[in-house]
Image 1 (cartoon, rainbow, N blue to C red):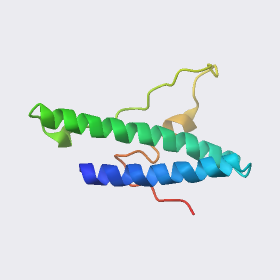
Image 2 (image 1 turned 180 degrees about the vertical axis):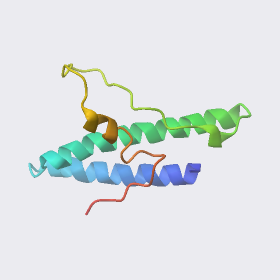
Image 3 (image 1 turned 60 degrees about the vertical axis):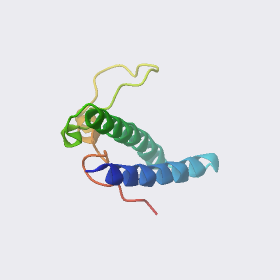
Image 4 (image 1 turned 120 degrees about the horizontal axis):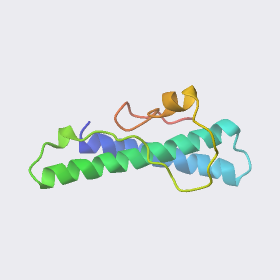
Length: 106
């Protein structure tokens, strides 16, 4: 994935994020919308991180294609306790920047 594709994915994710926030603000968001919003936030973080890695590699003479999507970072906040279940590991890279462009929901 090159920089232009990453930027395109970021734009799609931002548009979807805005749409989901609008639903939330209108009181029309479903639980699925909220889960998707969380996934979009993670994907955006990963895309921006990938773009930063590519730029740094290029700046210091490396191959930007060697940049890789890193696992999601844990956000500070209250602990939910316990270990994540198997679904959490399957969702880990869902919609991430390196896997595929995320189709915009209608």
